[in-house]
Image 1 (cartoon, rainbow, N blue to C red):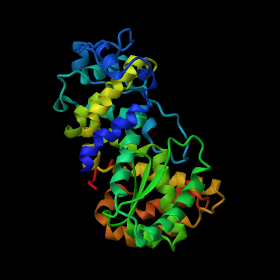
Image 2 (image 1 turned 90 degrees about the horizontal axis):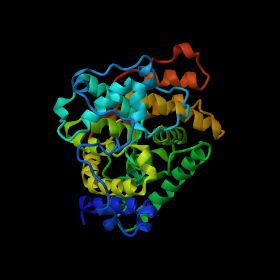
Image 3 (image 1 turned 180 degrees about the vertical axis):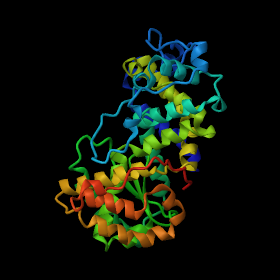
Length: 385
């Protein structure tokens, strides 16, 4: 059975485990028939909500962000933990007040197209993608299970058992780091992708994906292995995977309609209403196949600032675990040979080794703060797996 056919079933199964309230009300099918529905109202603006209705002015006037909004998007080079919010409407109020909320209501209306977006709209959507999380955790988990099922389908062999032993050593290192991280968002799993030529990356669903090349090379290079494992773990901790996916959805013609569906359910007020919980779950299940296809064709490629953040967090995890982080600087040099083999995609999505080394020297106390590389503003393009 193909992965594409499995997607809706697996995600729907993952979603169904989060619906005890709906089940207690006598069955999802009967429940759906009782749900009120107003086709002229986005689900994220329920009756009685303070969200303003769209006006003709809101359709035309550009939304101007409030002073200081851009500071929110600056990279967190101290690896601080900020509370994740799913309240898109509160974030819109912080971004541009009532005008931003009214404009989002217009964007979510059924007749609004990707081509209708203005440069100001795209800037606002970028803010929402990077400051809130509106792809539900249950959908993330469903995709994680789907990916694991697709990459672990071979029968066990002696070679596989050898790989399993190497993988177990990496998992031990991962667990050591993770045990010192407070409020880590969700679980983490490591899988081997035999189609991946080299390297490692993190993926929506709490996954760290390794190539066989990485597994074989890194077993004897402990500092490099620690760097990469801590770095990819940091991407998951900072929610870079889901935020970058959200950004790609709202800024691409192929993902825009799906983004609208997900954003229309991103209201925390609905989470306390069992009827809304059931309706949202059905919507997510119906959208699962489209979202799966999008993830498979738009592999997350982090932007340069996110790579700086992941490096900064890597230093923190090592310090907390009692591991000297100073060898990280020299470990970067050892990575150069691997990077050259995959230079095309790596160079577009990562800072230069020189920039990363400067920041690591500062983070590990080997250089003054003034010598750190300045964070960039470049956002990478998505790359296919």
